[in-house]
Image 1 (cartoon, rainbow, N blue to C red):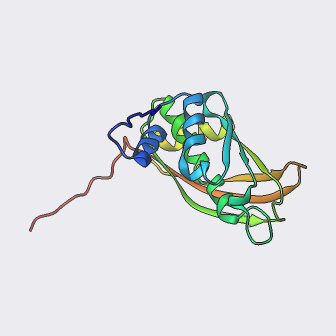
Image 2: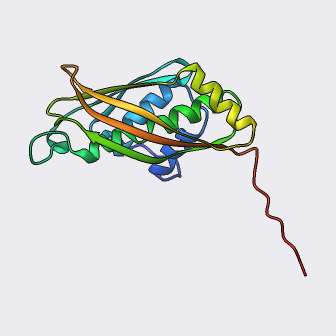
Length: 183
């Protein structure tokens, strides 16, 4: 028996990009991120998104495909796990509040404190005060650029990795205008 299916006429990476920038539910984004090839193949698994995108819980499964020469989790996998979540959370949170924003990870600094010989876990929570600060910055027409932490633990609760993510957010409502002068 042959089973076939058709895929919409957009590239797979374009499909996931579309899901990431549109307004979606927590459950839809959870499954989209679970199936997103760069995370899926690195064994990065979204456990849950909190209500209203106030946070996320993620597990990095150690496996044969993401182990390095000393049998700990490859640093690139750890970086890939930390990369998308702050921008996704801020984008979804602000989009659901009616903002049109551009959000991206401007810089990242990773401190490997001990080898990750077991699965890693991390949780990101965005407090109400941070959200209020972002909104105040955006209403003034300014760019929000701040560092936010991620701490990754193994299953014994030992800290293995600390990540500092510099997040850039700007409102698309305020665009810079170029002034031209003709002589």
